[in-house]
Image 1 (tube, one colour):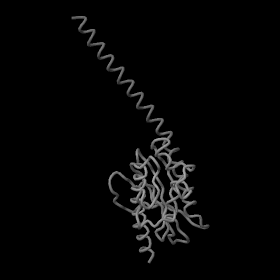
Image 2: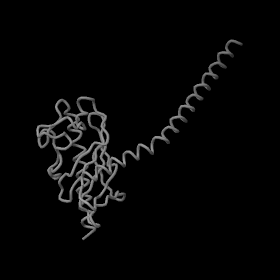
Image 3: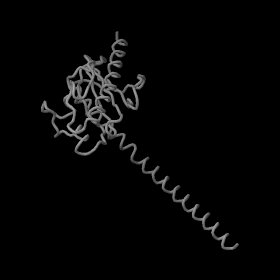
Image 4: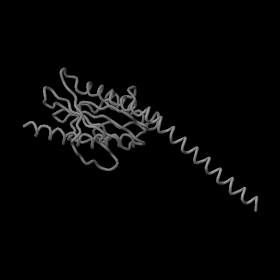
Length: 204
Protein backbone atom coordinates (compact mmCIF):
# COMPACT_ATOMS: atom_id res chain seq x y z
CA UNK A 1 0.00 0.00 0.00
CA UNK A 2 2.81 2.35 0.96
CA UNK A 3 4.58 1.53 -2.31
CA UNK A 4 1.43 2.35 -4.28
CA UNK A 5 1.10 5.71 -2.49
CA UNK A 6 4.76 6.47 -3.22
CA UNK A 7 4.18 5.74 -6.93
CA UNK A 8 1.19 8.09 -7.01
CA UNK A 9 3.20 10.78 -5.22
CA UNK A 10 6.08 10.36 -7.68
CA UNK A 11 3.70 10.71 -10.63
CA UNK A 12 2.18 13.87 -9.15
CA UNK A 13 5.63 15.30 -8.47
CA UNK A 14 6.76 14.52 -12.02
CA UNK A 15 3.63 16.15 -13.40
CA UNK A 16 4.22 19.30 -11.35
CA UNK A 17 7.85 19.45 -12.51
CA UNK A 18 6.75 19.17 -16.16
CA UNK A 19 4.16 21.90 -15.66
CA UNK A 20 6.81 24.12 -14.08
CA UNK A 21 9.16 23.54 -17.02
CA UNK A 22 6.37 24.33 -19.48
CA UNK A 23 5.49 27.57 -17.69
CA UNK A 24 9.13 28.68 -17.59
CA UNK A 25 9.65 27.79 -21.27
CA UNK A 26 6.52 29.69 -22.35
CA UNK A 27 7.57 32.70 -20.29
CA UNK A 28 11.03 32.73 -21.84
CA UNK A 29 9.58 32.44 -25.36
CA UNK A 30 7.16 35.28 -24.67
CA UNK A 31 9.96 37.52 -23.38
CA UNK A 32 12.18 36.72 -26.37
CA UNK A 33 9.30 37.38 -28.77
CA UNK A 34 8.57 40.74 -27.12
CA UNK A 35 12.20 41.71 -27.53
CA UNK A 36 12.69 40.49 -31.10
CA UNK A 37 9.28 41.24 -32.67
CA UNK A 38 9.71 45.05 -32.78
CA UNK A 39 13.17 44.65 -34.31
CA UNK A 40 11.88 42.25 -36.96
CA UNK A 41 9.03 44.66 -37.75
CA UNK A 42 11.49 47.56 -37.99
CA UNK A 43 13.76 45.62 -40.36
CA UNK A 44 10.77 44.72 -42.52
CA UNK A 45 9.65 48.37 -42.63
CA UNK A 46 13.15 49.45 -43.66
CA UNK A 47 13.15 46.88 -46.47
CA UNK A 48 9.80 48.23 -47.68
CA UNK A 49 11.04 51.84 -47.63
CA UNK A 50 14.19 50.96 -49.57
CA UNK A 51 12.17 48.98 -52.11
CA UNK A 52 9.64 51.79 -52.55
CA UNK A 53 12.47 54.23 -53.26
CA UNK A 54 13.81 51.82 -55.88
CA UNK A 55 10.38 51.15 -57.44
CA UNK A 56 9.56 54.86 -57.61
CA UNK A 57 12.88 56.78 -57.84
CA UNK A 58 11.43 60.14 -58.87
CA UNK A 59 12.45 62.98 -56.60
CA UNK A 60 9.91 64.57 -54.28
CA UNK A 61 7.62 61.58 -53.89
CA UNK A 62 5.99 60.69 -50.60
CA UNK A 63 5.16 57.13 -49.56
CA UNK A 64 2.08 56.38 -47.51
CA UNK A 65 0.68 53.22 -45.98
CA UNK A 66 -2.92 52.37 -46.91
CA UNK A 67 -5.06 51.10 -44.04
CA UNK A 68 -8.66 51.33 -45.19
CA UNK A 69 -8.68 49.43 -48.50
CA UNK A 70 -10.30 45.98 -48.53
CA UNK A 71 -9.57 43.33 -51.14
CA UNK A 72 -10.49 39.64 -51.14
CA UNK A 73 -7.64 37.37 -52.25
CA UNK A 74 -7.81 33.76 -53.40
CA UNK A 75 -6.72 30.77 -51.32
CA UNK A 76 -3.92 30.98 -48.76
CA UNK A 77 -2.42 34.21 -50.11
CA UNK A 78 -2.62 37.33 -47.94
CA UNK A 79 -2.05 41.02 -48.62
CA UNK A 80 -0.01 42.13 -45.61
CA UNK A 81 0.50 45.77 -46.54
CA UNK A 82 -0.41 48.36 -49.17
CA UNK A 83 1.51 51.52 -49.95
CA UNK A 84 1.03 54.40 -52.39
CA UNK A 85 3.59 56.71 -53.95
CA UNK A 86 2.35 60.27 -54.34
CA UNK A 87 3.61 63.31 -56.19
CA UNK A 88 2.10 66.45 -54.72
CA UNK A 89 -0.94 64.46 -53.59
CA UNK A 90 -1.39 62.62 -56.88
CA UNK A 91 -0.90 58.84 -56.86
CA UNK A 92 1.81 57.77 -59.31
CA UNK A 93 2.04 54.15 -58.19
CA UNK A 94 1.44 51.65 -55.43
CA UNK A 95 2.99 48.54 -53.91
CA UNK A 96 1.65 45.46 -52.16
CA UNK A 97 3.31 43.18 -49.62
CA UNK A 98 2.06 39.70 -50.52
CA UNK A 99 2.58 36.43 -48.62
CA UNK A 100 1.68 32.91 -49.62
CA UNK A 101 2.83 29.39 -50.50
CA UNK A 102 5.65 28.93 -52.99
CA UNK A 103 7.47 25.60 -52.62
CA UNK A 104 7.48 26.50 -48.94
CA UNK A 105 6.58 30.11 -48.17
CA UNK A 106 7.42 33.54 -49.51
CA UNK A 107 6.72 37.25 -49.08
CA UNK A 108 7.24 39.69 -51.93
CA UNK A 109 6.80 43.40 -52.42
CA UNK A 110 5.50 44.21 -55.90
CA UNK A 111 5.21 47.75 -57.20
CA UNK A 112 2.87 48.99 -59.91
CA UNK A 113 3.00 52.24 -61.85
CA UNK A 114 -0.21 54.18 -62.44
CA UNK A 115 -0.30 52.84 -66.02
CA UNK A 116 -0.47 49.25 -64.75
CA UNK A 117 3.11 48.25 -65.51
CA UNK A 118 5.28 46.60 -62.87
CA UNK A 119 7.79 49.01 -61.36
CA UNK A 120 9.66 46.32 -59.45
CA UNK A 121 9.58 43.13 -57.40
CA UNK A 122 11.55 42.37 -54.26
CA UNK A 123 11.57 39.33 -51.99
CA UNK A 124 11.17 40.21 -48.33
CA UNK A 125 11.25 36.55 -47.27
CA UNK A 126 11.66 33.19 -49.00
CA UNK A 127 12.11 29.82 -47.28
CA UNK A 128 12.30 27.58 -50.36
CA UNK A 129 15.04 25.00 -50.90
CA UNK A 130 18.62 26.36 -51.08
CA UNK A 131 20.03 26.03 -54.58
CA UNK A 132 16.60 25.52 -56.15
CA UNK A 133 13.63 27.69 -55.17
CA UNK A 134 15.89 30.12 -53.32
CA UNK A 135 17.27 31.18 -56.72
CA UNK A 136 14.18 33.38 -57.01
CA UNK A 137 15.78 35.93 -54.67
CA UNK A 138 19.40 35.28 -55.69
CA UNK A 139 20.87 38.25 -57.59
CA UNK A 140 23.53 35.99 -59.12
CA UNK A 141 20.98 33.66 -60.74
CA UNK A 142 20.14 35.09 -64.17
CA UNK A 143 17.31 34.15 -66.49
CA UNK A 144 17.66 34.03 -70.29
CA UNK A 145 17.29 37.82 -70.61
CA UNK A 146 20.41 38.25 -68.45
CA UNK A 147 18.72 39.69 -65.34
CA UNK A 148 17.94 38.14 -61.94
CA UNK A 149 14.68 36.18 -61.79
CA UNK A 150 12.82 38.90 -59.84
CA UNK A 151 13.92 41.72 -62.17
CA UNK A 152 12.38 40.19 -65.31
CA UNK A 153 8.93 41.34 -64.16
CA UNK A 154 9.77 45.05 -64.30
CA UNK A 155 7.90 46.70 -67.15
CA UNK A 156 5.40 43.86 -67.61
CA UNK A 157 1.73 44.78 -67.96
CA UNK A 158 -0.08 43.46 -64.88
CA UNK A 159 -3.31 43.16 -66.85
CA UNK A 160 -1.76 40.35 -68.90
CA UNK A 161 -1.22 38.20 -65.81
CA UNK A 162 1.88 36.19 -64.87
CA UNK A 163 2.36 32.63 -66.10
CA UNK A 164 5.56 30.69 -65.46
CA UNK A 165 7.14 29.44 -68.68
CA UNK A 166 4.72 31.43 -70.83
CA UNK A 167 5.33 35.13 -70.28
CA UNK A 168 8.23 34.89 -67.86
CA UNK A 169 11.16 32.51 -67.37
CA UNK A 170 10.65 29.86 -64.71
CA UNK A 171 13.52 28.85 -62.44
CA UNK A 172 15.30 25.77 -63.72
CA UNK A 173 14.49 22.85 -61.43
CA UNK A 174 12.05 24.89 -59.34
CA UNK A 175 8.75 24.90 -61.22
CA UNK A 176 6.65 24.93 -58.03
CA UNK A 177 8.46 28.01 -56.70
CA UNK A 178 8.02 29.76 -60.07
CA UNK A 179 4.30 29.02 -60.13
CA UNK A 180 3.98 30.11 -56.50
CA UNK A 181 5.62 33.44 -57.31
CA UNK A 182 3.24 33.82 -60.26
CA UNK A 183 0.29 33.37 -57.89
CA UNK A 184 1.68 36.01 -55.52
CA UNK A 185 2.18 38.42 -58.41
CA UNK A 186 -1.27 37.80 -59.88
CA UNK A 187 -3.07 38.38 -56.59
CA UNK A 188 -0.86 41.31 -55.58
CA UNK A 189 -1.21 43.17 -58.87
CA UNK A 190 -4.97 42.58 -59.09
CA UNK A 191 -5.25 44.19 -55.68
CA UNK A 192 -3.02 47.07 -56.77
CA UNK A 193 -5.00 47.68 -59.96
CA UNK A 194 -8.17 47.90 -57.87
CA UNK A 195 -6.44 50.22 -55.40
CA UNK A 196 -5.11 52.51 -58.13
CA UNK A 197 -8.57 52.67 -59.74
CA UNK A 198 -10.05 53.57 -56.35
CA UNK A 199 -7.44 56.28 -55.74
CA UNK A 200 -8.01 57.82 -59.17
CA UNK A 201 -11.80 57.89 -58.73
CA UNK A 202 -11.43 59.58 -55.34
CA UNK A 203 -9.28 62.34 -56.86
CA UNK A 204 -11.70 63.07 -59.73
